[in-house]
Length: 308
Ligand SMILES: [Zn+2]
Image 1 (cartoon, rainbow, N blue to C red):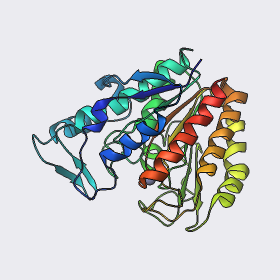
Image 2 (tube, rainbow, N blue to C red; image 1 turned 90 degrees about the vertical axis):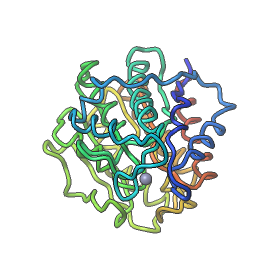
Image 3 (cartoon, rainbow, N blue to C red; image 1 turned 60 degrees about the vertical axis):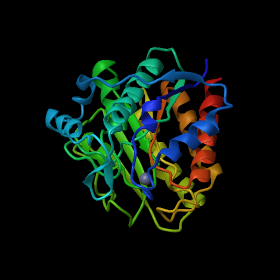
């Protein structure tokens, strides 16, 4: 069976103003980098409001829908913008992770990658922020727990920024282990080790500016992997941001493309041990186009190797 790739052309219709780092070209470059790979290509459905209601109150969903401009842009926080295509893009992004969970838990795909935008891990329960409108990774977790009745799901977020939204949405969810590594200090400022969730199921791993792959590998081996193995998740969800790359303009970590391949391969090993290899990965950040394309391809190639 092949790794599934979920995406939709609507995700290219979410426009941001000139000079904004979270731009259409990101997804174009990612899709181009994955073009020659032998993947099971699927089109993302629109998420249903019932799906989104697993993580957001109706007021937030209504507010996003009503913030859609008929032309141009609407700024909804310091760095988050909407264009006429943004609502459909956000519903496709959320729909992609829901379908990916269905495919992997239904045994139709060994693992899956969602090439989507807008990203999701900064969106909190009632707040769109940091380029994110809906909390895609947390939605994947809740869908797996509530719809598929899993007992334990893990989210691993290696984006360079703290997954504050995922942490917020799963803060009091004892069935979800949330592991997030981030450069600290860095926007949004949260993600300290003492933020551990209502049931001690949140693990924050701060990494110092200018640290590289060696520090990341040591931190994951010492903290994240033992915690994951002890938790024994039935599904691993990856918030795959590639902005810890040494070439990324928004942060100061120095991971190489090989580091992204390494962490993916290690997570695949743990998934093999715990849950028959079941992984759903979703695109978060990554703002140097070459680094993003190369690291995403390396990530997906490791998922493909594990799917054999
Ligand atoms: Zn990021």
